Image 1 (tube, helix red, strand yellow):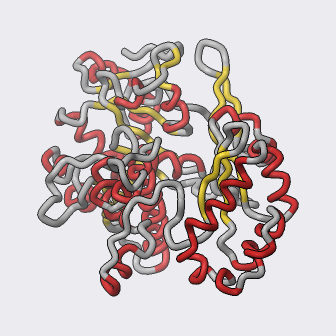
Image 2 (image 1 turned 135 degrees about the vertical axis):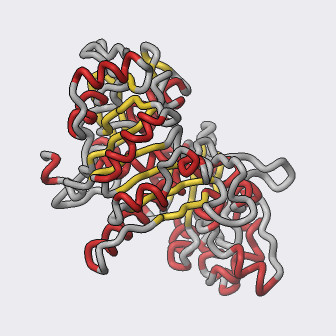
Image 3 (image 1 turned 180 degrees about the vertical axis):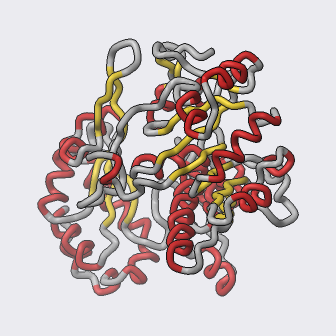
Length: 409
C-alpha cells in the first residue's frame, strides 16, 4: 500500500521527544501514514538509539520505535534551531512532545508561541504529572507513573515487595492515549470550527485510567485492593498453574458456563453441579479450594496435554509465551505480526507487525528507524533552506546530516 492510501496520509507531525512515551505516540501515527518528522539532538540523537541490545552501534529497539519517521538532527537550544521548529510547526497538523512542562516555552517553541503561528495546530504533551497541578514541574518517568497510578501496588506476590511489569507499560499506555487524543482533536478541528488544541496526557493518569474498579470499590466499600500474584482478584477461576513438565498454564474459566465445562473436562462434575459454585459470587469464597483442584489436575499432565483437554472443552487457556514461542507461533505468523526487514550493512531484523488491522486502509512499515539526521537536508529544503545555508548550519553544529552510508556530520 502506498502512503497516499493510508488513513493518516497528508497528516504532518512534528515529534519533539525522546525515549518512549512521545516517540511511541509518533510511531503509531507514522505506521498509519502520517509524515512524522522527528527532531533529535545532533550530538547522538534520541538516547533510545543506544538502549539495550545494539546492532553495529544502534539499538534494535530503535529500528521499531522510529520506523517510518524522518530524522532531522537539530539543536533545539540554539536560536537558529528554534527558528527551524517554528517554520516546521507553521505547516504541521500535530506536534508531539514529552519534555518537562515549561521547557519548550523557555525555548520560545511552546504552545503559546506555536499556536500563535498555526491556530490549527494540535499539540500532544506527554509528561509525568501533566501540564497543571502542584506536581507539574517535577520530572517523571513511566516507572513513577506506574507507581503513582496504582499499578505497582497491585503487581507481585502479596508477601513481597511490589514489582514492575517487564516493559515500560506506563509510557506505552500514555502514548496510546496521546495518539487517541490527537485523532480526536483532528476530528474536532475538521468539523467544529477549525481550531487546534492541547492534548494533555499525564503518565500517572494514563495508568490510573486502567485501574478498573479500584476507585469505586474504595469509595463505596473502603476496599484497598492489594497484590494477588498470578490470580485475578474476585474473579474465579482466573489464575496460573504449573504443569508436570515445568510449563505454566493460564486459565480464565470465570464465566459460569465455562466453569461448568471445565470442571467436567477435568473430572470434577461434582463441582460443576454444585449450586454454591454456580456463579462467580458463589465461587469467590471457595477460591482456594477451586485453585487446588485445578492445580492438582494441571500438575498431573504435561502442558500440551492439559491444553488439549481445555481446548476440546472450549475453555480459554494458554501457555505463557516467551519471545521464542512468539516468533514461531502460527497465529502470530498468519496475522503478519512477525515481519522481517533488512538491516543497514546486511542481515535482517524481525519487528512486530502493525496494530490495529484496518481492513481497507491498513498501516505498515515502509522503512525501519533511520540514521541520525538522515532527512535533515530534505526537510530543511522544504522550508526554504538552500544547500549552502544547510552546510553553514552543519558547520556551526546547529544541525547534522547523514550521508548515504548513514554517517552523520
